[in-house]
Image (tube, rainbow, N blue to C red; front, side):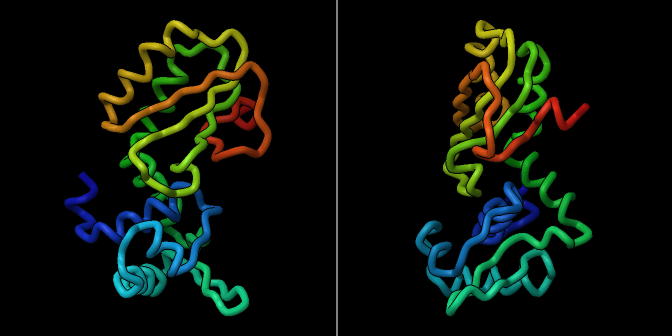
Length: 172
């Protein structure tokens, strides 16, 4: 659906790259390699997004690194749209609904780095998690958001690995 609003596939991939996780930072050549596109196509979209204020440039030695402009007035709106586009809102809702005593929901793997490989890896931590529910949940979420979902359950909390989508301690 977002593809009809943002017709440039490169621009959409850049928005996913930088707005899923605001800590993501990358440079032109790395993005060209990752996306399998020419540096000119990437440069054009990076310039457009930078001129609009959605991205900021930082010079690191002789390389220019790009990252999301978290001070932009639309930053949180764009991040929310991108996360909905990827189905992270539905995934989180389904996990919290009947999973049990969820402590954390953490996005790990490619998507936590802004790489949309079509697969979403999520770690769910907590006490007394409903393991039977989790077996059916992956398939149901995959059908809902049209992406492969891998859910891992852990009893103990995780440190700073991945992108935290939910943390009960921060909600309190």
